[in-house]
Length: 97
Image 1 (cartoon, helix red, strand yellow):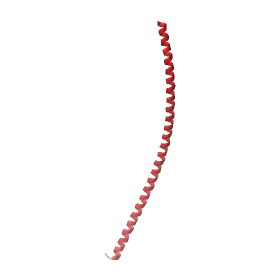
Image 2 (cartoon, rainbow, N blue to C red):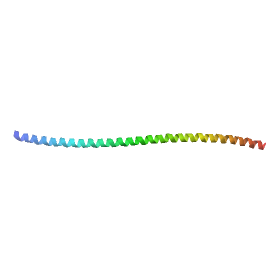
Image 3 (cartoon, rainbow, N blue to C red):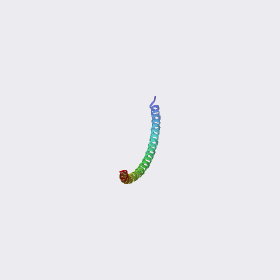
Image 4 (tube, rainbow, N blue to C red):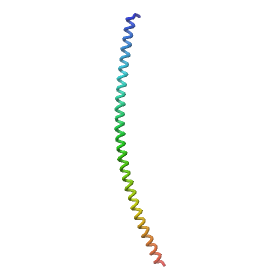
């Protein structure tokens, strides 16, 4: 093999290697761009879920306050009824005696 043939073969190998490298760079760039889009999509979804969670938390806090208030009112009603029942029981005992 002459030097010219070796240089020609080397030039061909270099061209093939250059194309392979360019193809690799192109695929890497495409994958990186895909990863960026996926990451941005995940960020949007996370933001949406964060807002939904905050809304849910706010609603549940308000609901818990309403339930607590209702329980207090029911306790007051039960206490009033208990006093009324005690009065009725004493009246019944008085009537029975």
